[in-house]
Length: 94
Length: 254
Image 1 (spheres, chains in turn blue, brown):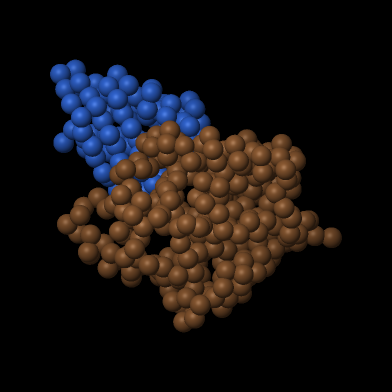
Image 2 (spheres, helix red, strand yellow):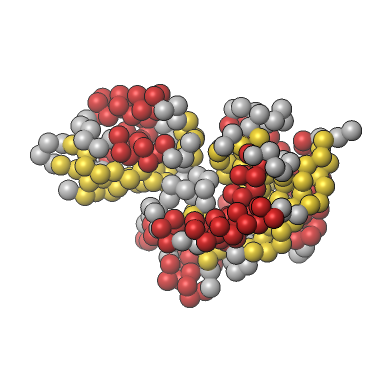
């Protein structure tokens, strides 16, 4: 299943997510995180996209995993945060 | 004695060359081969640049670009799509460790935008910095800015709008909802301004550049000495232009 979302992050930028997911298992297969936000280092977003493959599409689980990746790789987002990204991803399902 | 930085006035170039030069200067500065550098430039033909994380086909109407002879390029900086036409673009490249540059990214945005604001002041325009990355005057945007940090070096580039054609801009940019496009255009017309609009007269690129030079000198307490790109920077810029910024792989990667 493929889906897209557009989400204006509160006090932040416009996030656009492309999501391909396994409906039965509720898992991310492929994800593109796009928009006019800033991330340092920029390449970390591609790494985030890779790390999110096979992640369960459930709020708590997703938020925890995204927060862990941000911490582990010392990613600094401006105009986007873990909550905003989680919301943008889950909006692809609704 | 004031610290001396290099000033580059590279004139008008294609989108690919412009983005390649900024990146070449970043690399050269990171290797300690050139001093901190402020550059002023313009875009011929007019072009749209998109932020590093944006989808090219989501943001830009490529057919209209082709029809109107407008180039497009993906930046190495984040942020949004910008139509570069009648404007001065600046870039600043400086080591992250420089005492004038805050480790805090947001603070450094504010500081560099401070230079642009001082430049505008020399043209008789009062403005304010609105985080994350805008400069506004009378509630309307006159400058957008974007920063990256690579190789322990800061590159920030941004626009100073000299004149703006919102209708042309929206013929080139896609909007998320076509149904509200007219309203969006009307909104943006209310939210964007330019030096020409504010002063009621044309101001030349040279005059704006002179004002911005003073703005950067005052903000950072330095002297900008006009210089040229080194042979190495030129070669690197040509390489980046060919292999990256004019390449389909790069521009269509998202």
